[in-house]
Image (cartoon, rainbow, N blue to C red; front, top):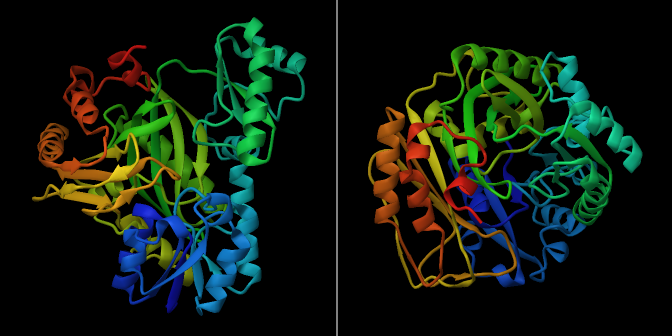
Length: 438
């Protein structure tokens, strides 16, 4: 077992990793920007080092500085958390060159799966269905028009190295294609330093479903059920649940078999997620996230598994603490993301509690929410025997939650979860737009 780990992240995920480290008997080293000096992850860590100014590019995205701090503090490994450098193959490679363990897949796997075109080809090889689209990056508007005509409009343009809705444009007719290719490519270049884009058939109002994977790096792959992440705003997830109301046992079996085949062949290491678009009884491979996901707690609830602990074990000792076939799923879990709508000081904080309730956050009374980083400040997660019971529990907890001093989306989350559409379980990724038309 390693003795000391550097967490190359901030906020709630850094707090989550610190807690897992302490239970494993591992010292946790936090890094923080000058603006983050009073953040909760700094308080909880065994050691904390300022990494630079508020700007992410000069602090949390400064790979050289992160590795230097890890070496100077005597760390054995680096955990990248989510976002920032978590899927950066170059940083993973430099981490390993420095003699440190990377808590994630090997760099070559990250590169393969981070290139969406290569990932599609790999998925096809392992029998996973993909949406019709370009075989590689689109090199010109003329090529794009031919592909779009073959797929049939609408189509979606995606960044080859992208994610999170950046470099993504939906095109409904031929006349809009050339301009949107240009815009998507510019966004991709600005956000991922890679302007390549590709085209897929756009599926209107699908479900967004993903499988949670844990793998030991030697071919053993455990699937911890699926999550439904269909409630989104501008491709940003708002509510996640496990299992998915849209997935049948037959679909689940096919998803599992394809995912296990893919991850086993890759000798995947650590935590990962494979994402699908679901429409009716059909599903299509979308992408792999070669890291832990923000919404991992719902999978932890239904599988009774500490995903962060298993991720650390898999990457440092090439093992899981349980056989892959021993995963047993029970009940229903739902997560609501609490986002700050503006910066400010938290003047009052009252956290809901009770059986099957979890609140992951870095907030505390008196904390100043900063304008420099992601707007998510907390995750409220519940678990109960059935979906209807979980919904009731989540609404009770949202009503009980008090965050004063900053505006949040708490009221809107109550509205969404209380809606007939969400309660029915029959909805797609356009649910938010249906409830809040422009």
